[in-house]
Image (cartoon, rainbow, N blue to C red; front, side, top):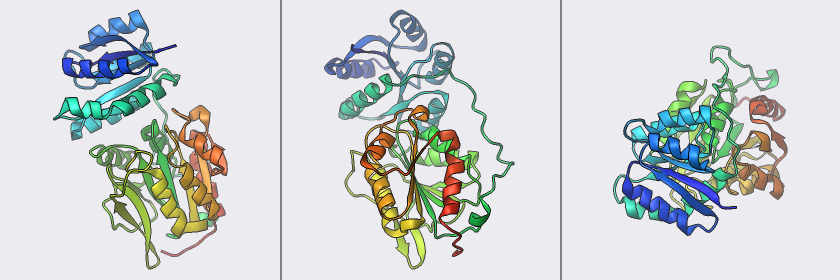
Length: 355
């Protein structure tokens, strides 16, 4: 049965371009194209779409207000259309908090060529969203940052010998946040790759820095990886971990995309496995595709420990599933238990004390 798609965008050009892309997909049908939230509301009730593409910037009622109402009244898979600006990035992350599953960057210039360039990705994201059962919007109870969680006793030393590598894609912005808020400031250094384009990762890192106990930054290259710090791969660059004497340091790479992604989880995890060996814990969270499976296997093969998010708590059980199938996963864990399990595995690595 064809996936029913509703396009909501105030730009007639964008509506036309998205309609063209949807029409060309053999497993999709366009049920409507709404210029604003009020028309969209009526079309949602009339056509009950399987997926909605939603513009953030619209007249009368913006996309965020519409999304919040939609998720409260009739939860539906939504893929946001986001402008490549700082304001657009912040609004997009807010949309993901409200329940949107993913987003498609909309260039400010060259809209026609830009959106057509993303055609394959747009279809892929709509297809993935159609398979997700969206839950009604509820306010998450996150741990209070004042109630500091303690590392297990034998792992309490802030050693720089250990390192945590986290990878995610679709649904990953919320999953990474949900994991990091479970961790204490004393946790070993973290490197992270989330599939996002340039312009979005810095805003994402800033939001994580405000909502967790960790010092989270978008990596610039050259930083020493220290306990209590988390480095996010910047959009458009792979994050690689290298040794500099006894230290782990961040290096950025402009090498070719892997699995069509730059940054790619595999690149990061394979570098960590190479230099960290048994001192590495790899974590693979929700995401579409197979990026990270090979990297998780590399970590496991070199004596590290690997954790994958379970299917029930994933938005899209793609990347973790591929890692399990490849034999790269030691333990499958629900997202709300991931922090505690991760700390237990840090403890099991031993009590190195080099700083």
